[in-house]
Length: 408
Image (cartoon, rainbow, N blue to C red; front, side, top):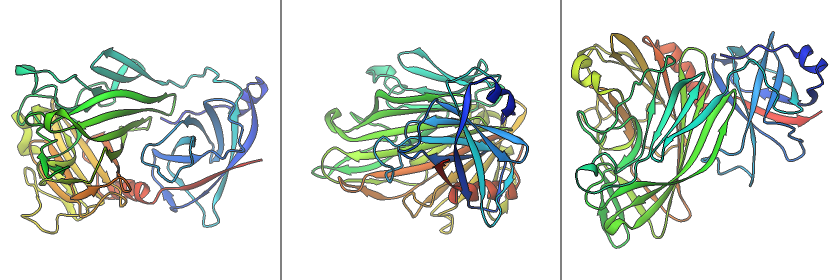
């Protein structure tokens, strides 16, 4: 939740001094739990990793400095951002101005912070108040019987109580794993064809290193280098993948940003709706016990339990700004809301399965001059989301608040 702080107490303690303001423009209505990314100009003296903003009603908001967002190619080199999670808020037509106060140091407060923990060399975890929130599973490729479980990295998501809601290796369709990206039909080099979804033969995705980690009271962010390896295990593309989890009320909000660059000539990415693109897979429990209770909620309304749509059976099942899957896990209903950015390649062809997997894919070519840039969000909540709430979250993602920081 957004942390309520007493501005006067902080000022009197000598920990901070007011030194900037933020000018807001954008959607008239911002839903609760909306993250706003504010580029920090070169002229602003960033005194600490956290700050305080006032001017959103009676609520004072914590801001956290983030070093980088992977898919923001428009950013200047070494561009830093201030990220703030807003409550429900309306921006007047003339805009709004917030007063900003840097902490003189990263003073301790009652606000709990995210933290990273390397459980072992193949598993890292983000925790909040002692509970797991997000895991990055990045095994080293192994041969023989262990290969199936180690041929690609993925991300596990937990609910607010620390319960795991996603599926790992094994179960129905072992190639479905949590939050993941891949393409079953890839062509590169001298017409070399590989499958980076099922990762057959030599083909596999290999975690290389952590590039950046940020954690604090607003968010946790990790940027990783992942090599896409094909025939003879040669690297034909390199992915820079960023996962950001925000502290928001009522659920978990995860942002997936990715930049994939070719290591040589053009790389053609293709596949089919069930075996390519960016996808979410719920726990295998859904497949085993509750698939008939899965409900898809789309921009045109809620479907009946157990029903699904897939391209190309339904040619119009493309370019959805959002799609929601409501599923039952251990007698508790959840909704995973999938938000697609208009900047992602199109046509986005969507796929749904009652057993708990959904997502979309596209056909695109990567070149040296044109790397692949992706941005998605996954919102997880308990209960079934209504169409208006899903629409509002999508609108905030597609048409974000325009925020400009200026010195006072």
